[in-house]
Amino acid sequence: MKSSKAPTQQPGAVTGASGAVEQCVSSHLKTKTMKVQDGFTETAAATILGKRSFDEDAMLVAAPLPGRPGSRLKALFDGHGGYIVSRKCSVLAPTFYGRMQEFSANAFAKASFALDAALRSDPDVPIGPGSTGIIAVMEAIDPGIPEYMLHVANIGDSRLMVLHEDGTFTPMSVDQKPSDPLEMSRVRRAGGSVIRTAMAVWRIDGRLALSRSFGDFRMKNRSDLLPSQQKVVALPHSRTIKVKPGDILVFACDGVFEAQGMTWKFVANYVAMQLQASIGPPSATGGDLEETATRLVTTAYLMGSWDNISAMIVKVLPTALPSTVVTAAETDVLGTRTERPTMMESEATLERSGAWMTDLGLYATLY
Image 1 (spheres, rainbow, N blue to C red):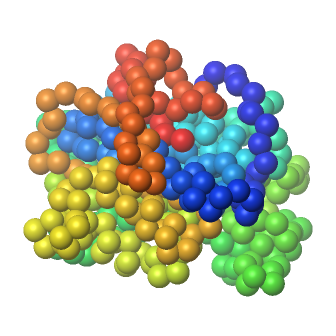
Image 2 (cartoon, rainbow, N blue to C red):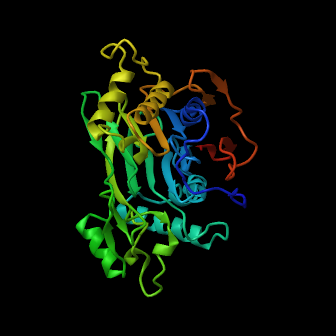
């Protein structure tokens, strides 16, 4: 990633009440989207500011895996204390996960700790900010057929699920919270405390509501302990399943799920109904991934989420697309859509996301 100083920002402050309500809602609900059609996959990502001052989420919408034709890497990172860690992760992820020789739990752990070490050594990254990560490798079983082994690693509380054609869904991630007995035990062995706040949220040292993350280096400051033994660790939970045409991958930050009623089951049913026009409500999107992702993040906001809200939806297609197509847009609260320039001459920076081509293939980020 090009060296780039992070712009001055207030870390994730909730937007104040000053100014017209209409202006606040307009900025809260302005949606940035990106759609990538590539190989046997179609991907749409959407993000909104929500009731925050800065969008700390970042998504890796597309990246190739060197030496693995037809395979893809996708990820979502939900930052806290600023956006520098999440955005750095979105661009650095292909370097660490894209070059793994195999996709075991041990391989994901090594890659995650290596990425975290790179962040620690980066002079642009302060000790305070951090980020979750939900990383998915779609390993092509055969470059000529639309089937993948889906390898997922999650750090923190962002989520990924797979929707199946029979109406069921498979959770691919586990929330990693200080309230978990095993997590709490590690935190305390490392000299930390786990406190239940007045808002009924368990926090490490009264600060962090996650027990695993990238960054957060003030929580990883014991030189006598291994990276896996610190109060907060970048050790992922991993899971693998096979996916085939008709399966839908749904990535989402915790901003989607913090709204009242936005459970795993609700989100799975909502996305499925929106995409299946033949059985869905009259207002269903009829299979439009970008519109469905936009409606999902907007619904979370309207149902009470106070966070940045981001989601990415990936559909496995039965036949390969003839060419790679990337589009990006911004849509305001009235539904007015404005296309955004997409292709860049070089990789993304902290200030600008987009898509760029290399000898290895297409890379695309959204934030």
